[in-house]
Image 1 (cartoon, rainbow, N blue to C red):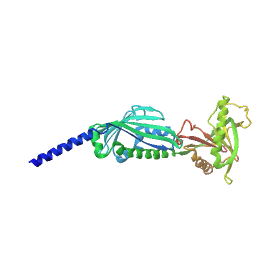
Image 2 (cartoon, rainbow, N blue to C red):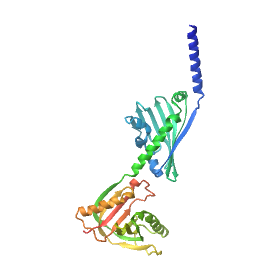
Image 3 (cartoon, rainbow, N blue to C red):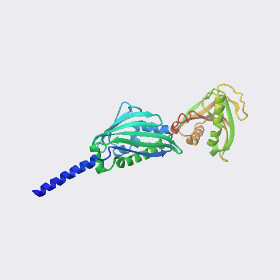
Image 4 (cartoon, rainbow, N blue to C red):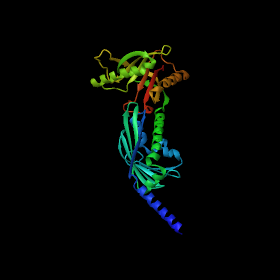
Length: 341
């Protein structure tokens, strides 16, 4: 009997000691994980800002793809929300409380099961030399039950930090795939209206074309702005000669104008395109897919009994502005090849 009393006494001391040890653990926690992702901040921000996109990169939903997800009336921006329920994930919900577009997102996360706890989540998107530095952070308070849980399972940072790391890796992968999406559609034969344009011309190796364009097109844009000239459409490349055998190309960078412009700089000239019949193709996606778009366009000419005009007009029109449309998957480029009626 005396042994049993001692045993109960020792157990009581152990329980009290454990309770005291749990009670004196830190009341708050704070940690973060970061990764530089080669993508525009706006692309990453838009992905994280929409809870419907979390299935693509959430490390927890990866553990239980069959979990039930319920979305609020809004899934983006302030008051956007969603909740989950599953055997592995338990039950919980998230809600966006504040945003600074393309810079930061603040969220509240609440767990209902297996035990109740709440945390603040913060995302930041900062410019970095190789892309955007994405930081995923969490802060919160620990009640007694949360402290007890972390005592036996490790700190919240120890258990959640690796999940954040995994989520950032997945976010990187998902965004890279998103930005590579593209489509090519041959629209058919139509009439190209022609019109006046200002231009500068050059020749170079085909592989150097993007670099050469990046030097020439800004000069035209600066001239347009300096002289308050009204543009009549998106800028384009007018191809004069392409020698695939020697890998060279002659071309002009052009900006259409509503009227003839008398230019005042020797390297910027005025031209006029007469209306012509053209086969049009639309590329939605990165400019790296232009080679394939041109190949499909010319294949369509030969396969559909169209006759390309010898030394005829070939135009590459850049419908979207990358400074306004940062995701390459959303770039629009129209190709026009002069064909006989």
